Amino acid sequence: MPPVAPPPPLQGPAIRPQQSPQNSYLPVQHSPIQHPLAQHPSVQHPPVQLPQEMQAVPQGQYKLPVIPGVAPRIYLPQRTSLVVEGGGTRGFYGAGVLDAFMDAGLMFPYIAAVSAGAANVLSYVSGQRGRNRLVVEHMVNDPRYMSMRNLVQKRSYFDFDFIFKTVPKEYLYFDHQNFARTQTRLLTGVLDCRKGRTIWYDKAWLEPDFIPTIASCSIPLLSQVVRYDERDLLDGGILDPIPIEKSIADKNHFHVVILTQDAGYHKTATKMSPLFMMVYHRRFPHLCWALEERHNAYNRQVARAEQLEREGRALLIRPSEPLNISRTESNPQKLLPLYDQGHADGAAAVVKLRQLFRLPY
Image (cartoon, rainbow, N blue to C red; front, side, top):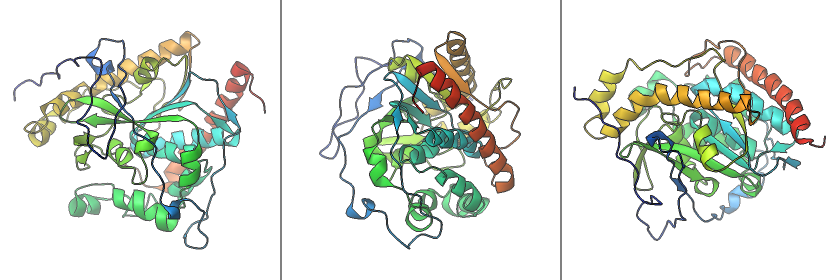
């Protein structure tokens, strides 16, 4: 196999896809860091008008309890960011942390999230405390949610139509109105397979179908490439598994980082390179480069976050012990303790944030 070369450096002050009558773009801000992995184009879009059926809480049509969204009571200071890692179903640790933030009524003015973290943070922005726990209790062990049957029949281990369409319409109410109302800059990272770079979609791009979120959750080999916005997209956690560099590039001063691995974890190089090359190299050579680079990106971003914490410019929230849970774990009896651990660690972090920012109770 020929060696995989990195994508060429970005040129000019902005990268924009071709404009169309449906899409308009604002200038894109890039990181001042010159490392090729640290240059982050962002995509912005005007607010969308929600369909009428998304603007009210329906009664009696859901199979699980309806949790209306609650507006946040306390916004943290500007230039304070929340950075959320993915990790597949290990990300339910982060869901517990987010519920602890909702218990305290806290909202961040800026959120950067990828992969499963980008999915879990939706219920945080919509203010629906406990919604992600109901997903763990009732949905993750449903074979329609994730299974080898899905991979064989639909070429995706996770059935995103079921997760993002059927579940919020029939099982678990999603408060679109409160989601749209919450004043936060929510950025969802996805990998542009052709360019080998992370693209960031802001909150207004997500509704009503959450295609950027689906793309961010689409794990290579286990999911199909998502075609959206004239791009071919996959897992946002490939090159920005902990999007701390994006948060720094956007000039945030303090970063709260939710991780799903303990402090002793060090990611090693993938052993799947031959398979990645066989499946993707012909169409997406820069994707193959990104997949080979992923462990370096992860370790570099964790080290950067740890450095910021030592400098008093970050707060890291992560498990105290190795999780020993795979990213496709579907057993609620294993995932619920993970959520509860995240909730306890999130509550402890709230105490630190109250002291640091002198927040009201």
